Length: 259
Image (cartoon, rainbow, N blue to C red):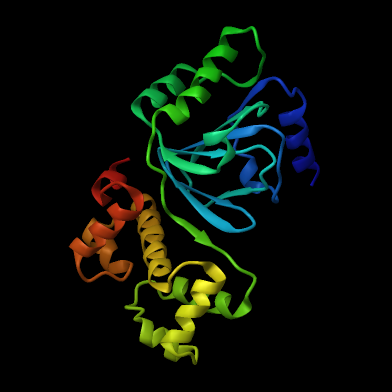
C-alpha cells in the first residue's frame, strides 16, 4: 500500500508535467487511479489490465490509453514483457481521450518512441521534450486505428464464475454448448440467457476470446507451431482458427507470432 501511495504521489505531484516511467512496478499494485491520463505501451509479451467491469488483454506492440480517474490494475505473466508509461495532464481532454482503448503501435509512433527511449521523469511545459511528448499524445486519435477487440467481461455471479473457470481449464476441449449446459445442469436456453444477462456477451463469443487469448500466450511462451497451437486451444481446423484470430486481433496468427 505504501508503494501504491508513493506511485500515485509521483504521478500527480506535478499536475502540469508529462511523466515518463519505465520501471516494471505497476503490475505489483492493487487497483488504483490517478488524475493524469495514461499511455501504456507493451513490448515483448502480453499485459493484463483489470478494471471493475472487464479484463483487457494488451499484446506486444500495442498500447492502451487509460483516461484520468479510471480505476485499474496491471498484471502480466510473461518474462520478456517491457512496459513504458506516459502520464499526461488530462485537463480539457475529450473524445478519444475519454475512453479506454487498446490500439496497435504504428510505425510512426514506434519511431517517435525510439527517439525518446532514454527519457524518464517529469517534463514541463516550455521544454522541447514536453512539446515532443505532447505531439505523441496528439497523434493517437489522428491515426484512426481499429481498436483491439479482446476484452472479457467479469461478474460477481458465482454461478457464472464456476462456469467460466471450467471453460478456462478445458479450453483445449470441444466445449460444445449442449455439453456445457448439461455439465452444469442448465438447459441451453437458460445458460445462453445467463451469459447474456450477466456478461452481455454470448457464451460462444466468450469461448472464442478465451481460445485466442490462450493462443497468444502460447505464441509468446512456447515454440509450438501455429497448427499445434490451434489444436492446443480446441480447434481442429487451422483455417477456422486463423479466421477467428484475425477477426478478434486484426492480424494473422503468423504476424502476431513474429512480433
